[in-house]
Image 1 (tube, one colour):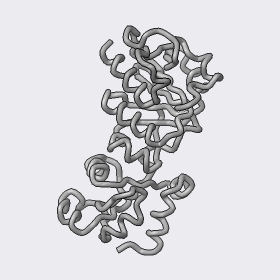
Image 2: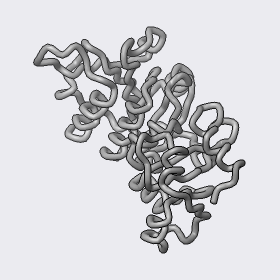
Image 3: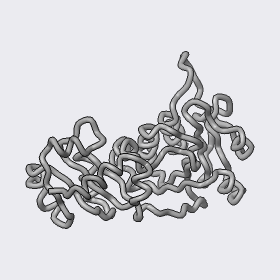
Length: 245
């Protein structure tokens, strides 16, 4: 069973400050944990119900495991319902220096919704895009809602938080395609092998200071009356057309 100190640690990981201070984060639920166990990411320890531990004995035998009843697991989890368990994972594995030559890089400018970020991570994984560049004020990659929404894809997509202007200015030969309400039709756009695909905040779009780095404005044509698309849907449409073209 967990000690009081471990319980206090787990509860602290529900906040960004706690995750940063401890350099740890939570992975919750059956599918996410199975993805994690089958990856190369080291697990600090796993908290799981007794019947699930018996079910996955061989799979988790190399991991430090604590057995708790389902009621306690639900209390400690950030999910509304979680009777399977959760893992405590070190952030240290997730330290990346991105390279931009011959790479498609999804660039996020001020994305604030953790579920939206998790969806974008999952979409990138689906289309084989290996890296995401985030502005410093984007939501936390390790937010439990982000990890949950990514459905395990967070272990396969590299990421880095950095001032976007610094990256664009250091890589002037790589075009920046900005997702905007006006521009060339995404369906007929030719995407280069090395490219930054820039998506803005859910409500305000791409910030004015980053507009000057855009080399081509690209839009998803609207045929109905909806006001806008969120960043996750826009990312999926862009990447689908990138792979088609």
